[in-house]
Every structure is written in structure tokens, then in C-alpha cells.
Image (cartoon, rainbow over all chains, first blue to last red; front, side, top):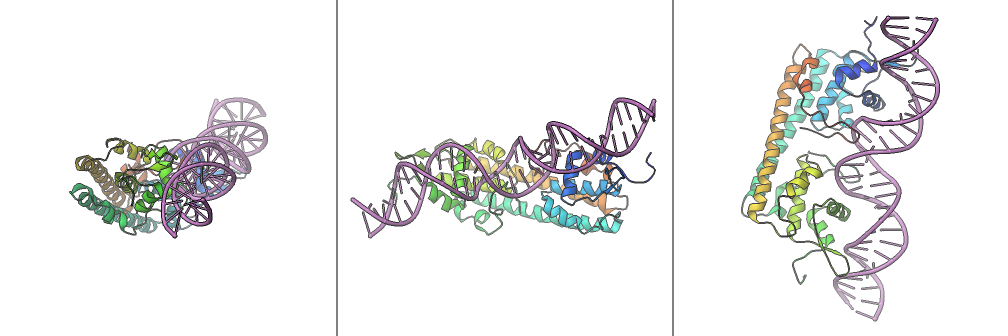
Amino acid sequence: MATDTLISIGELARRTGLAVSAIRYYEQRGLVTPVRTAGNQRRFLRSDIRRLSVVLIAQRLGLGLAEIEAELAKLPQGRPPTLVDWQQVSRSLRKEIDAKVGLLTRARGKLDECIGCGCLSLAKCQLLNRGDSVGAAGPGPRFVLG
Amino acid sequence: MATDTLISIGELARRTGLAVSAIRYYEQRGLVTPVRTAGNQRRFLRSDIRRLSVVLIAQRLGLGLAEIEAELAKLPQGRPPTLVDWQQVSRSLRKEIDAKVGLLTRARGKLDECIGCGCLSLAKCQLLNRGDSVGAAGPGPRFVLG
DNA sequence: TCTAAATCTGAAGTTAACTTTAGATAATGG
DNA sequence: CCATTATCTAAAGTTAACTTCAGATTTAGA
């Protein structure tokens, strides 16, 4: 048992299901900020388990790491967040979810209208013509969804 | 006005909003199969406008090109699809949407349960522990969502 | 104390979905 | 017929989110 409350990167990996390399990468991106031992090894707060769990959840909701970074920026840095802190993040994510559900529901309606009916007029269809983010231009993958 | 019903890659690009380079890439991936002129230029069916429009829609729903390929494989190759053909694809996409909405709705519930309440027991939370695809392992981007 | 298991760093590789570039050839409108 | 615009190909570059590798150092437990 550890003397204090800090955990190693290996343990954090086990607790979150993440690979050690992924956690190091998240540190680079600023998603976690561990302290170092005298021998330069990373030591994380126990609350970072939750922090990274939230990252995983947000990823499943389709957020990119940059957006997740913005969410987590609302939490106190380096100090364990309180219940209220977490609830605030939770509310933000909930809004994201609500928005996505709305978008999908609208898409479903349009799909029925535009392909399902006899007109086949996809060209005039709202689904495509609306200025709704078609995904930023430029190279790289295009997993947008909103 | 063109003598026959085939269109050039430039026109297809204008009609779909896609970049010419993207359309060439989609050809490589097998999503469209244009014929060639005597001078080796691509000529597309008018129905390919719709075909690529569906690709765009499916991408917005979060499908990867590989999955979209599978969807489009159900359409006749090289010949203009009928209304019924399109409706079949539409039904498939509708199912995808329904599934995603369900997933998000469940996620929302769990989020409220696990972060919103006082217990903060994310570790025991269904959101993470369930064997629900955390996204295939390996390198590359991780935009999963189901 | 000593050794096996865990960590460290930096650089390079990987996947997805495209874009950019360069030099060459085709098609079109006047 | 000719200039301008559109296309062609192949190869290399780009972004995101990581992984893999190699060699060196640290920790932890018997």
C-alpha cells in the first residue's frame, strides 16, 4: 500500500483501461498534470482516474480531445475537484448529448422526407443544402456529426 | 448541354460540394465507378450525385467510409438505382440513426446517475465497465460512438 | 541488497480521410 | 485552330490520436 494517495501511471492505466502510452499522450495534450518523484516517474492524483474516465466518456460522445480539453479546463488544475465541479462538467456533457440527439432526430426526419418519398430530390434537400457544418475543410479525418 | 447523360468530375464536384480530389479518392475506395472517355477522363452517371450525397449524409451520422462502402454495395453497380433501391439504403441508415440515438440516450441516463449523484462511483459505473466497444485497439484516431 | 518489473524519453510508425503538387494531356468556346 | 480551362497520375504531405521501439533508469519486493 502506498504511503500517500498518489498513484503510478501503471495503476492509473489499470483503473481506467487506458494504455500507459495513451496516458502519457494525454499529459502532453494537457489533459492530466501529474507530479514527479525524485526519480522522475509520474505520480497521479486518485481523482485523475475520474478525470480520464470522463475523457473516455466524452470521446464516446464524439468529442475530440481539443473539445474535451476545453471541458476539463473548467475543473481545478492539480487539485481534486469537488462534487459540484464534476456536476458542472456533467451538465456540459448532457447538453452535448441533447444537441446530438436533436441533430440525429432531425436527420432522421429529413432522410425519410428526401429519400423515402417519391421525389428523390436530395439536391434540394435540407439535409445537404443547409449551411450546417459539413466538417471543417482541409486534410485529416472527417468524423464530425454536428 | 452534354449530348448524353454523363457528367464530368468537375460537375459532380459542383453538384455535391465535394472537392475533385475527394471524388477521386472515393473512386479508389470503390464508392463510385465512373467510365472513361477516349481521352481517359472520368464520366459519371447522374445518379452518382445522389450516391455521393448519401455518402455525405452517412458520414455525418458518424459512419466510416468502410461502413458506407458496405451500405452502397447493396445498390446496383454502374447502373442507376431505382427508388426501391434507395429506400432500402434509407432504411439501413434509419436503423443506424435509431441505434445511435438509443446509445446516446442511455449514456445520458448513466451520466446523470454516475456523475450527477453524490456517490461519484464512476469506477463501478456501467458507462465504462460494460464491454461496449471502447473503440478497437491499435493506432489511429478513435472516433467510435457505438 | 539485489533483481525483476515498471518507467522514462524522443523519435518514428500507423490509420483514416483527404489535399497538394508537378508535369503532362484532354476538352471546349470563340 | 488555339488558348484557356479542366483532367489525369503518382507520390508525398496533413491531422488526429495514439502505439511501438530502444536503451537507460527507477522502484518495489524477497
